[in-house]
Image (cartoon, rainbow, N blue to C red; front, side, top):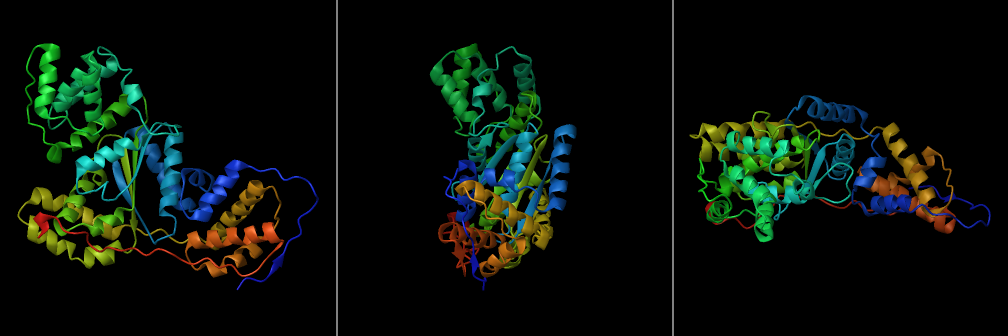
Length: 414
């Protein structure tokens, strides 16, 4: 119960509104995290932020690669933390990709995951995704082009991207250029079509060392792009993956395949260069999926005699099991957040609340234990003070429970 509080607005002056602050308040009120909120509320959880800043520094200065799993309860700030990382990485001249897993962005199908990652890739300090305009400016005989052609020919599992990039750099046909660019963005061209284009341009055949198959060789595209971003002068690539727990709704074999794909972003020996991936995962995943659906037993039954697949999947399962959980914010950290919300609310609506932090803290008691609902309770309290000059009991309900019910299984899982 929040004690009734009365607030007297002062003066008859016309209030001035800060629309950026209003956007911030509305984002917080809705409970939908945003990058703007992440930029302005980055002081919470100083320990983990120091760790993450250290990781970004290692990626930038030492071309370190790897990944980390961020585990936490619903509503406790996982997505907010990813948005904060987004802003830190962009400020450090790093390319950032941000996706949430879903049916359209499945972790078990790497070629579809790649397509969504590329569609949601941001260059530093850009508000909109996209980087192909910079690729279009690479000339055929430039140092960047020569380095990328050499890399694509020698460092990848297949050399398809060598023929693709060489064709892209040398064609003057706009339709061909569009098709080849679409391939780099994940709309893969058929091998026969690429070979036909290459022969037309260079009057010689394209002879793959390994025939490209998108379901097997899509990791080449991640490695190619990570190298390209470095050659463009950026300091690394940060990939942010939210709602990782939605893997739990996949069928048994699809889940194991998703873990296999995660190994490409968590195990340093498998990762693209100068690339770090953060996976945000619901804390209940270990109990509900790994233990509840017997993932280690499934792994043994399906891949027990294939160590090249068994070993990385088991390593990923162990990483998921051992992922440290986000600690709840301390009372002081929550108070700092509440005071900043009060400041933004005043800027957003042109008034000066000047409430004590104890009063704000009491206003959140009906919001339950989740950080998200505490924030919404505080905003409702400030809304009432602003509109009516007094506020009483707030009435924010806690919403949202994770569900790991499987989708309709694929034929291979029946």
